[in-house]
Length: 528
Image (tube, rainbow, N blue to C red; front, side, top):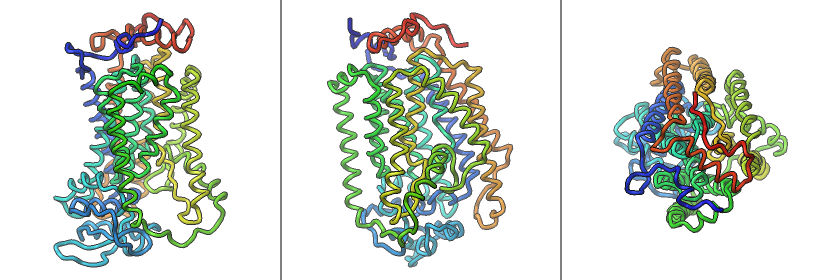
């Protein structure tokens, strides 16, 4: 006997009219996650000095230019590192001390080329040819301010966009999860370098958070057997469109995510999705976004600066050197691309991720094993192939965090696998996981402040946070995250007990995948 669409969809919250309900529980998860994200991002924004973030001065001048009407895909080239844009003189002067200390800038990036009057000058920016949509939003937020104040306003705007996307991802996971485990998995997947990326002025952080939301929505599609609720469709489609538009690599990561989901999804779910009207409309919106992003890339290609002098050495040796840096860079490397975190941060990551991976992989069905292996293998091969192909022209450019929009799916897929087997993470175990992750972030922030304190005199406008302030922000965020996880309780949720939903879901899994009798539970006790 096959599972009907109505039965497969019965676990999804509905209102009296049959439409997908945004329940009080969903709203609580969203608001708690939003506040928790803002607190941890605030800690990072305070700890990382102005313009110390990776290429932050380049993104700041681009955002200021777009906010003042520069939507031209083509820019005149000057120097070795970027196209010419117009930016406020106060912003350029505030960034100059940090800019001149970098080896990826020249005087055209750091000092005005020409003075235009009305506090406007021309400088070069590596981001001059990037898609302007992200920069239009954050640049508008920074326009009423000058100098350092403008940068912090743009950081705050970028961080808020990221926090909203993370909160939406958490809300979506809470709608399809039948235990607390996927919410714990989402917290584990939010690694320190992701939080760092959300707190500086660059589109990378928002791209990562969109990846998190896309993964969450697509796993909801799989859980509902191709019958997702409206909120899942809207959030997933919106995140996919934004992800396609804000960075050139977005469409590539999105394609890989879709393929990984295709690998793990049952064939009946895939067929149902292809027959669904919602999938056609969502696909059309995403396709149009990808076409728009591609059109911008083609139009701006002539503005890409020529590479500097060829890099000497062997690309093979560079790849061997880069492999460990890329691996740890996907967890914790900041604020510079080669500045590693204290060893304690990596030890905490090994313990948390080791226990999580071991538990999940032992219980995951074969399709999830294959999909997880695909994500891990592809994310490891991409930097190797790119470095071998481009080393002599652009050097060792890859950073481990670049693949995070794709890699964050590993934790969510494994959380899905544990949830599928009715494995529950009790609160007493969730708390140490959150405490460990928070401690890793606090150690990182303390190290950054300590490392940059000797240069405080040259870092204009840096408000140095105290250790007490950072501790309060990080562990207050952890407390709110624990409240989010508690929303995944197996008590009555949205009119259906979680045990009833687990019963429906495990029956479907058993029929499609021949799971063991132990996995087909009719009831699940409440979480302690």
